[in-house]
Image 1 (cartoon, rainbow, N blue to C red):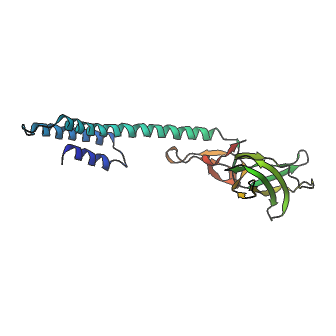
Image 2 (cartoon, rainbow, N blue to C red):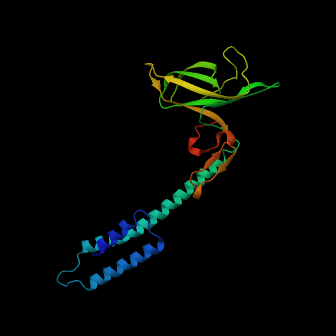
Length: 229
């Protein structure tokens, strides 16, 4: 086996897991030893061509390049994980919209009825969006035609009253959308519900940072936050 084959086998074997600093150093020393031995024992009538020697030296440098690349990528990953954790921590006590169709209604004598905001996420613009709010038993308490809604995320508010203007009882409700295009064809629409970020749980090694939204909504990943209110 020549030096090039030895180098490529070693590099391919370490491709998925990477090389440690010690492993890389050992490989370089081994390859240099092989190259010197090859030069000392070459046939004087058929010496090693410059191009071939350059190629073999390039293979040795490949090992160093992989080590440096792995080190750089590791550093970038660590920085991204730290940035994600910092970003998540900044959301504590902030209101967000995440996938879900829950609407909470509260009421008191001083402020009257209040319903948490809700939202919709559309991949493409809808010519007509109809919203329906139902009670936990499935009774329709409110409907509205929101008209044309652009692609992306839109948030809406509801006063916690029926279409007749009557205040609904405090409690949990559900919101659903029916989105159609100009031809009347149904479009995919993701309902979004309001939640308050109460804490942050970092994942292993900084990955998979989770936002604690309380007992009702549980935990979600930071990628599930569609809008900050």
